[in-house]
Image 1 (spheres, rainbow, N blue to C red):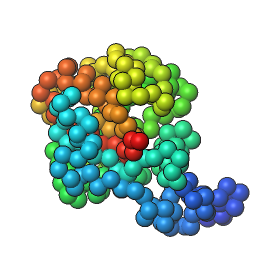
Image 2 (tube, helix red, strand yellow; image 1 turned 90 degrees about the vertical axis):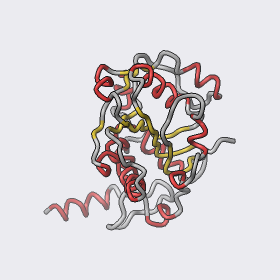
Image 3 (tube, rainbow, N blue to C red; image 1 turned 45 degrees about the horizontal axis):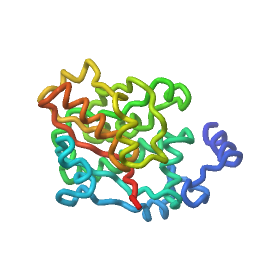
Image 4 (cartoon, rainbow, N blue to C red; image 1 turned 60 degrees about the horizontal axis):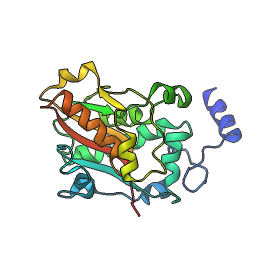
Length: 232
């Protein structure tokens, strides 16, 4: 019976690859095999003092930082991030995060991580969007490395979208937005992974890492994002 329902559903609402638009076959999930193979991976986890780590150097102590693939506005693969963030496909983010985490886990990059901490959304954004894409990404990573997902950062107030802002404007836009939760103190001396969907200038992640370090000075922080923007 279920196979019949699935067959009819696939006829009426075919599963399409967000990158190329082609119908997915039975063995493909969210993104077709060809587009997945062409995903522009950063491989930052294989580099010493990679560009993402350089982004935070001298601003906040970060143990290590990496992102899965490059995001470039207008590119074919940008549709993946848009689907995860704006088009009600957070499970695609969790699925990709599992793939990413499996690669990181294989080389020991995730060793010693005690909790995956998603960058929070303000309650007003949660109400309109219905989900926090960063939390789904954190869940995917946590499922692979065997750690907990913890909401150690809270969005105290809403801020304007960062999309069309420059680096200085983004930094100003995040001042006072985030605060550490009451649970953060329980992770004193531990190592947490701050997780977001994409990093551009690093303003949001910098703000979250800063409030965590201010609340828990001996907290160790690493950063992982699903995507890393190519800055022009």
